[in-house]
Length: 464
Image (cartoon, rainbow, N blue to C red; front, side):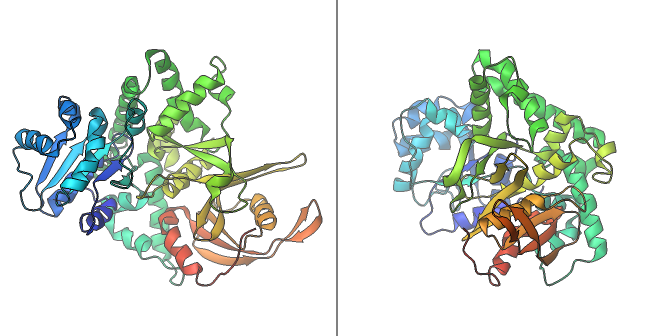
């Protein structure tokens, strides 16, 4: 079976002295159930697994908020006593029995010795239909997305993993490792991170079979939309689902999705797909201070799709083209790189992932930063390039306007940190745009937080 880095978070959680029930959230088919099963197996813990989609009658029992009655039913269904040493209770598809969410509070208060994990894909929909509140402060959340590039490498070519996990700016990467990782990153943008696609690729190295998995997953999602939407919404929801991968990197204009439907209806569908974690809104932030989300303009946003492999399948990019990406031009090669980086910047196990970007529209020239992130007190612009070169004009305008001394660029070059001294024309005249540019190859996106931790020891500044 394939390793998931989230197993480390599960180990930390289960060893907490004041452990709360853990709710794992994420889109369908990203591996939530498999993660829990593998964690229990590797740690030799009995797993009391109940798929609540198959036992809907339990909702009436959970509604009583009687933990003893609920556990008696669970023991009868599973055949495993909850008192078994080390046992973990796993309530899968928890959105199917909404009152189980409410019951989690009472498990925390009355059954603290029993580790409880719940997994669900559509919790916001469930809560919208019920008046009871979530047990805030008595549960813990964890977000799980598709497999990351590092997890893909762990499965596909483990010997390369150390070059990502042990990377340091003070130790240059071997040129051979750099070339191998670039090649694997090109594989990843075709295969993506959906576990079933990664598994079939590792088992067969068959492009055709991986594409068949993508097709099956995309079809399953569209068939499954009846669970999220009313009948009159289905056709539009399927249309939006297949259009979003073609819009990655662009500001969302509802007329580009459909001229036949009101903007309000299209926005409602995007709301639903965002709640289901099928796509993620990236809001424009003015970036005047922290937190970045406090300074957003909600009508200006772009979208990142859930998975780069599914994105390429829906866009019709096959392996013949992607194998040479980005040396061979693709219509959406920049969007592919932006999706890859955005997908990984959104990979956070704690809470709900968020990401921003910055755009300035002027009469003479426009400027846009692909992503803006925060790291401690830092505001950091992130530019994404699909090749080895590209203009830094927008980046230079941003660092000048916001007085930002450190910026990040992802491209195909080896890692590097350089001081940029540049003069830029602004509304008030010629200004200096002196800053440090951290250049990283696309495949090192997951190393960024640790690299920034090290750089914070060298930099001290206040963003304006």
